Image 1 (cartoon, one colour):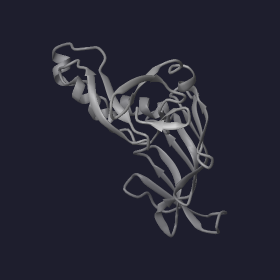
Image 2 (cartoon, one colour):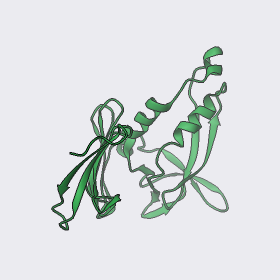
Image 3 (spheres, one colour):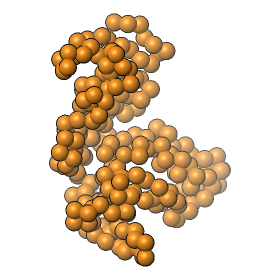
Amino acid sequence: MDKLVSGVLAFIIIPAALFGQATKNVKDKETGEYYSVLKSDNGVKQGEYQKYSYNNKLLIQGYYKQGARDSIWECYDLDGKLTLKYDFRKNEVLYYDTAKKANCGRTYKVLHAENDVDTILSRPPVFLQGSGLVSAVLMKNLHYPDDARENATRGRVHVLFTVDKTGKTSNYHVNTPLGSGTDEEAMRVLKMLPDDWLPGLVGQRAVDV
């Protein structure tokens, strides 16, 4: 085992069964990620992948093949409950707990050039890294602003954004301002999430939502 690098990365050199290439196991304590990279190219992930929350709860597990997500990936909430199962080979959602429960019958604003239409989607936008990661990012990074503390400001900040037909996000804005720095803080932390979505569908057609 090589020595710890900068107190964060630990490498173990092992033979890779696939393609006969050597890999190095990486444990990144800062991000909670466990994975392997090719010995010949540290930028290419290869093999099993796991990501844990700040309190050591498994959030994501899957498999990389030559740097791309491959096979079936699973995401969990902070209680260890499965929330998403996605097959990257077939580009197919196998299980999505949030879609079946919280979003059942919910309308979304589908964006058109001429006007916007409130629509029940056949599939809402899906965050491919799971609701558990959303909760973990918020809990780790959200700070109560000094102004909000001094003014005893409390409540909810509702942030709207667009997920387009390619799965990219844009147009973040606060819908119901709370003030005292809370709106800016909510926006700051939300934008820390990876831009990694499946678009919403009407029938089988991807739409801007």
